[in-house]
Image (tube, rainbow, N blue to C red; front, side, top):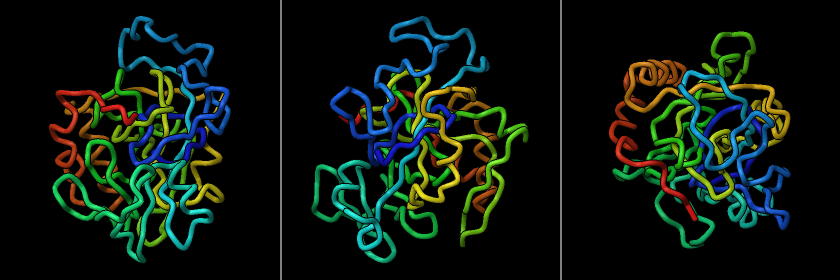
Length: 261
């Protein structure tokens, strides 16, 4: 998975990269890896909440994709984040465990680079910057949708740069599309922001490393509610309605997000 900052969302850390663990057993943001970030979070092995609609607090970080020739200390950034892009269009990539350039394509061989500056996550699906997240596979499947009520209902506004740098108001929902070794627990997420650096990144200020004062809800993959929210993301990215739902169809219905390492 990629770099990790704190945000208020529920997601599995991206396979694209993952937060690097410190000697204390946490990651570089000082968040422990046992899922016990929030005082209201349930400990490992505890009974699942009664309903996905229950609002629960969460701790979060953000990660991105470093670019060769643009990101300082590129190789170190790849080791931290999991994947890095090579070439002006980002049509090639290297990973934390393979320095040999590979085509930056999804599981069907379609390119992930281009206007979104993305890479494929753990399920081989191209990640959507600012709208996909990494989560613990013990609790979430690829295609589950995590929403932050405060953003979704307009109580808080989050402006994110999309195509051609145009800023649009975030829908408040993220698609589980990745995993990461440091993303553990039902209340721990890592949000993908494409090639956007941490400085000036709109999700950086919105992240929540420790206070857990924001909450999330879950809509399971394939449900009508999850599809409706994917369609809203399609609209923001100027994609045909149903594009994301089709992309994630059957991607995680029979399995949880595979662990990276």
